[in-house]
Length: 410
Image 1 (tube, helix red, strand yellow):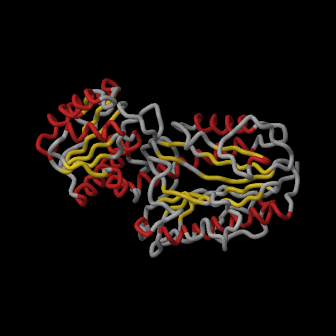
Image 2 (spheres, rainbow, N blue to C red):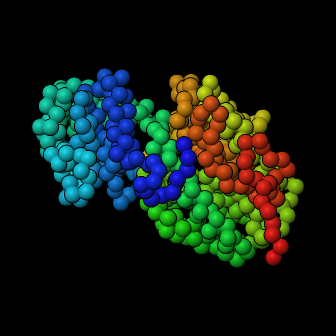
Image 3 (tube, one colour):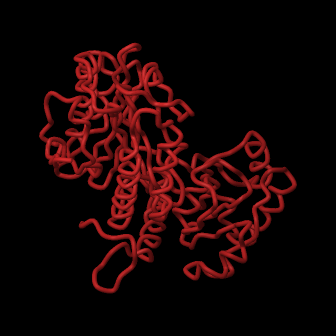
């Protein structure tokens, strides 16, 4: 699939949002059928969006009572939301009667009230096998009282099965999120020089994200420098960056609920890195691309994971090398790090991984690198932003951009 612009147009087929919403719900229904669920209760905001398209002012977060979805077997999603007027006005793909008021599930009485509304909507299905995606201690006590005839089971894993393989429109959303993230990287790099603070660079990246339509960011984002790269500090501060510092940048924009996420490490200023710094960066770089090379049909997530936290191939990882799946949540299955046998699965086309090895030593520097890669017959790395050539001896065959820059005379 090609990489398109951000707008809707009439002269080519881009992201088809009606199809996106329809196919996501269909995948959830198929996962429910396979698991024998009669209903699915969804409280995580990113998965409320996955099933309905409802957008909150927050990113992925566990907050109960803002919105919820009930997906009954054989039926359409029922959205419960604080923003009922907004949703009924602007979400015509959901029937008006399936947009209900706020779910007050922060207290036992509120949960009982919501449960009676649910029973009124789904009838006898409320006495069947119900998947619940996440619970507080209170909900773990209240839901069995409110649904005494139901069998309550883990619904998060059921929905994860639906989300792991991306549709063509989800793939396009991920690629657009990456394009926006690249623009944020460039805005940051244009201003990476001695004396600039970490937080100033992050502000520039975030500004570019927002200018291009990013809804939020993949996390608080990470710009760390100098001694904070080893031991690695995973947040941004007001530290002024100095010439010769290593600078780790781990950022990601959000496009229509899908999250860009990749990492590069740079040298600040017009200086050469040390031999030790090149060695560490090359170690992280080799681990990254060797792991990405496993992201193809016929392999497993265990094949990717064997390159991470491996003392033979990544001896300086300090247990920080890892990775994860991504989608409407920037951190979701399939997993690739610290795997136990029951989570190792065959790779299928459309699975997406963020692979992020690390190598570092205090006094020398830390080097975090990350790509996002789709599984296919061959790996499809969608984060082609080049690496700092000063820190590389050898370029991997899967790296399509590093080493191609032309330096024009000033």
